[in-house]
Image 1 (cartoon, rainbow, N blue to C red):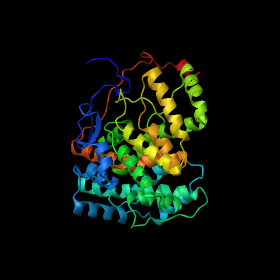
Image 2 (image 1 turned 45 degrees about the vertical axis):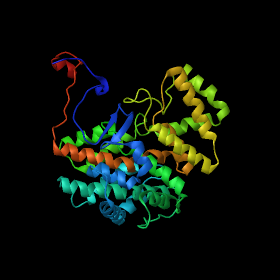
Image 3 (image 1 turned 90 degrees about the vertical axis):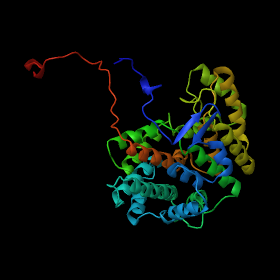
Length: 374
């Protein structure tokens, strides 16, 4: 057995998956074989959610049934609404999401049933209810009244409605839908691996998704889209961008939204999200962040040969849509629940406890002496 240590499991293949793959031959992230950018162009998020969970795109009857089940499960229990009302107003929304899913597990009658059929039903309930929980907190922390979900609205329309009390123009909704599709799944990233590790002990789906949310919160993973917006707010205006990025590189500061463990010559999701970032900026008549984006990107590629990842265009897009910065990663959550759930069910289907080894580097054998206690 080799003693070579692969920090961060770099380059280690730990299992197989049918859910997604970055296909170098077409330079694209694919879900069940479909290129993510094609799904963005031709599908709504609900269709992609169905695909990820059910292994194929739905026909009209399957989609109608799936959408009805999602809409029928959006409402929260009175208890969960009350818990959200009692949460500290300064709580990070990712902690709210984590706690809300955990409470859903306490309330779900099938929590202890991890059969494929039960997990599919629970996955759909978590998928349907989590946006409602987050939107409720979004309202409460601002001193506003909770807006209950509306069954006549699509998944994306309903989230805007629950947060803001209105649905924006269809181009904004489409851009939001695209972001959800691009965030829905990405193979064995750290939060997905967390979910699979928890599942490997035969824990329940609520526990696995709770752990995945905690993992996604970190700035080296899902929290990067928030950090991108903080960076842009520091830059403030395009005229400051060149000086800011040059100073950051000189000081060897981490520039958020750039680089990726998997992509070395550019995240295949970026061109699509960049396009919709531009569309939203045009609708909102605000090109400030687009100009900052372009300047920073150009310098990073020229000086470091490091390309942006999908968080780079997504952060300012969500900002222009009106969302608070600390809500960017929770939006990631409501999308990635689909990918996590698919991986959890895949792990259950061919489970092996995930239990790696560690190379010990501590003290050699020592004996306890009576003197040590005096």
